[in-house]
Length: 314
Image (cartoon, rainbow, N blue to C red; front, side, top):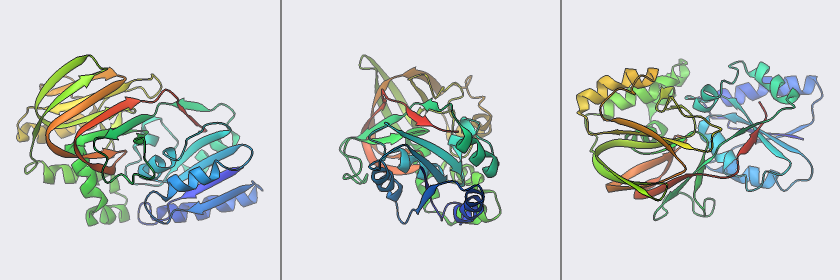
């Protein structure tokens, strides 16, 4: 059975309009399905947990943005007889960009319905210490991420984007992916930097002065197309860590176009490496995001790769 979870508000109503078109195609071809509209934050997590209680094969298809996909992934506590698929209708669509999904929704739907070779992708886990603002009843053991988890400047950008009228306005003219870049330029001059210490795989300690942010990447892209970690591989069982630190704010502004193109590897103040676990402590509390969604404010968190990959039809 196919179960569709639709965020009707994604990209200023695109999710609902897209579902209307795709539903007509499903009916035309007499595909058996059930569907649900998300009604509030974290509703997709609850819906997935309810769907997984059904008998038989369960193919869950998300129509929404990266945040809705994140919520759905967090609903999986079992992968037996269950798959996840994604038809993007958000602003950033970094997951779809990273794994090269078709940009044509009808083509993507057909591919999902006829797929007999599922893909398997890594999942990260973010544990904030102490837990805060993460809906403890839903995320008792931390919060998963499919794309990235970051602390610092990138999370502050995501937080403002979630509450910004700019994002809504740009979505209406199909320029929503510019939201993150424009907010980054706005915030960068006033953003307060903090020193950080990291513990890598339990045995390597490193110090980083004046970090802009530290991100654990499953995929190369975040923030609507910025290639934070061009070498990230979503199937290798590793996090690709991207750290931006100890650079002037003018340099950080000039750096943004290079990050968009993934050409930052030579820059002083940028470091990347792979690991399975990283513990991060910052001198002052900073905002955290998981797949662009607000995940609390803290000065201590742990990022890790989960041993079990999630199964996607695509």
